[in-house]
Image 1 (tube, rainbow over the protein chains, first blue to last red):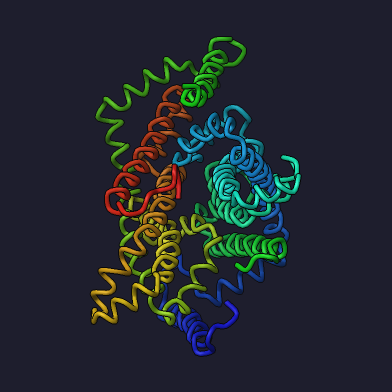
Image 2: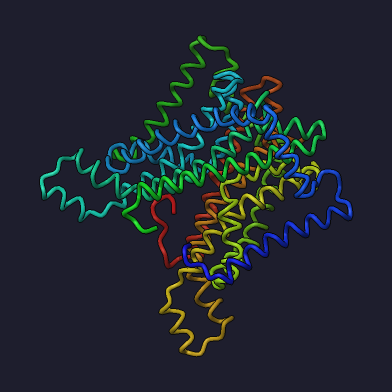
Length: 251
Length: 253
C-alpha cells in the first residue's frame, strides 16, 4: 500500500471530493426530505457529539457487541485450534460445525430471547454464536496448514507436544486467525445492530429505528455515521494489532 | 466405522438432551417444544401452499440481490484486477467501508426504495457486493504472469486473454466470494424481514413468536437452516462442475 503512484492518490481524492460535491450540489436543487446533504449531516453529527444521548446509545451497543465478540472468538479460536491438531476432536466436532455454517445464526434470536430473556444476555450470546463460526473455521484451517517439516524439526529437537502446539502451530496459524477475527468483528457489528433493531430500548440500532419511526432524519444519519465510524475504528485497531503481532510476516 | 459414528453421536446426543428437557416438565413447553411437535409443524409448513409461498418470497429476494451483486461484483473485481488505475480508485472505497455494517442503511433504503421487496434486495445486493468484489479482485490480480505473457506472445487479443486466461484463472476465487456472499444474502433477507415486513420466512419467525407458537417458530427456523444449507450445497455442486480442474478443499475455501 505504501508505494501508490501520486497520480492515483490524486485521482482517488478527486473522486471522493467529486462525489461529495455532486451530492451537496444536488441538495441545492432540493432533495427529498429523507436525504440530507453532506454539510447538514456533518453539522448534525457535531451537534450530537455535544449531547450525552449519543454516548449512552453507543456505549450500550459496544457493551453488547464487544463481550459477544470476545466470548465467541475466544471459544472459536480455542476449539478451532484444538480440532486442527486433534483428529479425534476433529472427527467429532467439525462435521456438525461445517454443516451448520451456512445457517443464518440470527434466526436463533427469538429462541435465545425465550431462553435468556429479552435483555442484553440473549443479544450477547447470539453475537458470540455468530462470531464463533468464522474464527473456528479460520483457526482450524490455520492449524491444519502448519507445515509438517516444522513440526518434524521441532520433534527432532526434542520439543514436547504442548511446546510444539505453542511455539509452532499457534504462530503459523496466526495470520489465518486474524483473518477470522476480522470477519467476526464485522459480523458482531451487523448482528448487534440487527438485534437492537428487532428489539431493544437502547443502542444505536434502537436509535436509528426510533429516528425512522418519528421521521427524525437528522438522528438517523447521526447514528448511521456513528456506527460507520465505530466499525471502521474496530477494523483499524484489529489491523494495527495484526501488524504488531505478525511483525515477522510481510502481509 | 467409528469415524462416521462420532459426529452422528454428537448430534443425536444434543437432540436427545433437547427431547429430555421437553419431556421433563421442568421448563415450560414454550421454551422446549417437543421434537415431535416441531417435526409435525415442519411437515405442515413445507406441505402447505402458505409456507411454500413465504419461502419463495424470501428465496426470490435473497437470490435476486445475490445475482445482481454477482454480476456487478465480478465485473468490478475484474476491472480492478486488470487495471491499476481502477484498483487505486475503488480499492480504498471497498476496504475502507468493508467493516461498516451496511445494515445501518436499511432505514434509509426503506424511504428511498419503499417497504416492499426492493429495499431488501438493494441491501442484499450491497452486502453481497463486498466479498464478491474483493475475492474477484484478488483472483484477477494474481493471474500467473507466465500465462499472460505466453498468450500475448502467441498473438492473443485483449478480449481473448480475458476470456481464455483471466476468467478461468479467477474462477476459483470468484466462487470463493460467492460462497461467502450466499449465506450473507440469507442472513440479510431474514434480518430485514424480521425488522420490517409482512411476508417471507423472517416475518414468519417474528409472527409465530409473538403468537407464542414456538413449535411453529422452530419449524420455520429449521426451514431457513435447511434452505441455507441447500443453497450452499447447490453452489458447491455448480462450482465443482464449472471449476473441475481445481479441487475444493474438504469443506470450505
